[in-house]
Length: 47
Length: 345
Image (cartoon, rainbow over all chains, first blue to last red):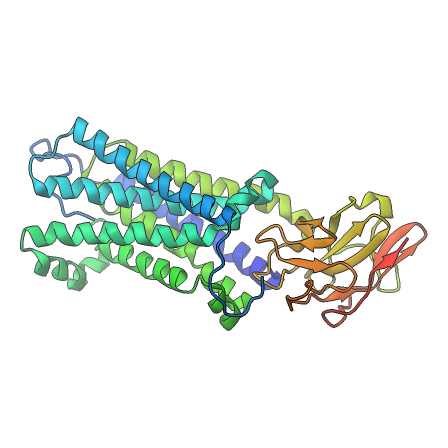
């Protein structure tokens, strides 16, 4: 990689990693409690 | 070997690589579906399609994770270099697996005549202001577009057309795609399915990618320090015999670009550390059959003048070298590509 690519990689990569870690952490903490009446994996919209 | 437009050249190594890739994907998806069918037999076609969505989706996630780990692994241990050789095919296959995942998702909606509700999910703007409830499929779609662009431009024709720096920049958006995929899963299936394997897969994958990149980056930092100058602007490298035979020492010039100083027996020469193909780290390669060989895809250059052997036409910038007081020194001003500059000691 050229110096410019290394610099961009080193500057942007940690920002992206922190953003994803934060997003993943929030998604885990804020997810709604399980609904015992709903069978898992069949009722919710699919990805 | 030329960066010009030509038909894809298959060789035994590429065929073996691709066969292992396809076999691995088939094994994963087959095992997933058999196991899912055994543990939770689908009650109807809808549930069966749901299992296929998950099988292909998780496979694509694992493949992107592995692709992102290959770079730092190859830096940390040369034994992983063969994985890098045909990484582009890995990327194209990942796009295809992700595309099948989307295909089954569309089928899931179509089976219920609910395709309009899928359209509503994408166009309900108020949901884009939420965190939990964000239209996670939009994140997946954005990642799929990036994977498509990478797959569509993966051929060497596009590498030559866009030039290696632009092509490399485009293909580094895989990191953005990875972030989008993690959030696609985190705001999607993770929100309504309490299977601990889902957060486990996300956390272990993300930790592996970040951990390996941090480790490789930490190991690389030392290489970015500018080499010591001899006082006349020449950079000190090492005593001749301290440069590994058939290998190189990599130093960094005052402009931050790296220079690979190779020794082939009694011949010493310095080349740009950027391979003409994909700007791979030529100094991490070896001299094979008398030619400096890039560790990424095997592009070769003569040590004497940085030219690829005929009939190939690639050339690397060379640097003047000398031995002063028993130490190899390099003039950091690059010579025009293809200029003979190596010396005999």
